[in-house]
Length: 267
Image (cartoon, rainbow, N blue to C red):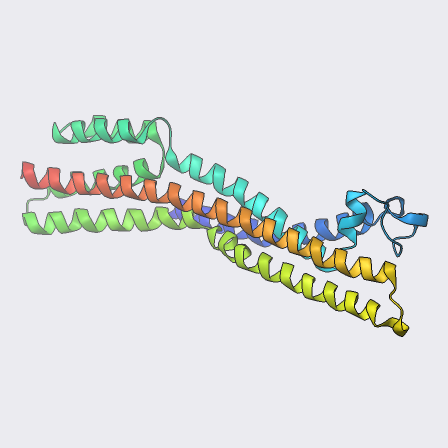
């Protein structure tokens, strides 16, 4: 329990530090890299970007771009963080082989071998199995509790051990889910602002300002592309990780059911 709380606390601290840091990085990139005068005609960021200069075109997306850049970097950062966390939670080797060996040892009453399997696997599944095995030994040696009480105790331990592992697996996924919506909305906001500037340029003194018009349209299109692309990545990675977590959860449920059923059959 203490280890799970430490992991959760570290994850919260990581999130609190990373998000402001990424925002600062995005602003600096936008101002000094994308907004470098070398990307614009006449060396002036107020002018149109040099034709074909990708950095200059992005800079013309306006002040919404750093926000979208932050969201994109958040997606990439938390994707890598979740990938390493969930990979570690899967443990070593095949979960199917681990479950097979674990069930065989449990059915044979070889609890030491089953515990050794858990120590070798080292994943979330193994953590739950090891926790329930400790309870299994206790209730098996208890001469006071009834069989029904022992089975309830085992089932309760399975649920508690699972509830300690799942928050670690699901942590920061809500950020990816939120970004999938926010990125699209921010892109649309940038689009609206860009179109407002474009139409304002058309209405300027009765004669269109081509630079202001192109800048407004560019801002609209850049923000749209950035927002949709970021949201698409967030949705893809969110669905991928939830699928991986569902597989781990299914294996945990299967192991918990096997432990309870084995105890029921043997006693």
